[in-house]
Length: 153
Ligand SMILES: [Zn+2]
Image (cartoon, rainbow, N blue to C red):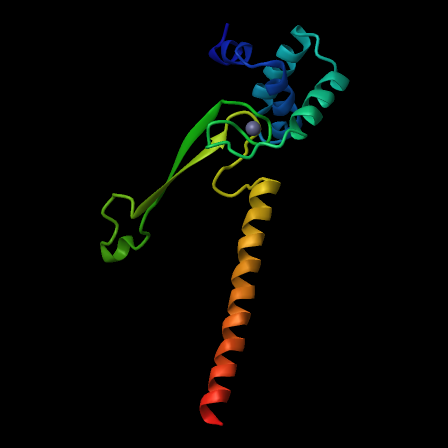
């Protein structure tokens, strides 16, 4: 048994369904084949997998705390690290050490990226705070206009 087969055996049905639905085009053919084998060995029909995916997508997860995927609800969250290097080798600026590194978490099942993806709830919350800032800004401008008008007349 390969390590991947063993790993796939630990996945729940819905997690396999999400891999098929979201990552099929992103993973290597060999991995895809093993996912398919696992799906077949569990006798999961396409209809059943579609239904599981739809059910999970319908769940509104607000407080995920980066421990549970807000899209597929899996707890298989991976930590990724991306390093950025200076590319000015000719000037001797590249010390070999990264200039900066970002750590971010992604869902190991469906690929949800906590750094860039946001839930509907998070999007609404962000938009609301932006609108509030705009309203406050407009009020401030009106107040300034009023004060200036009063001061100069
Ligand atoms: Zn996920």
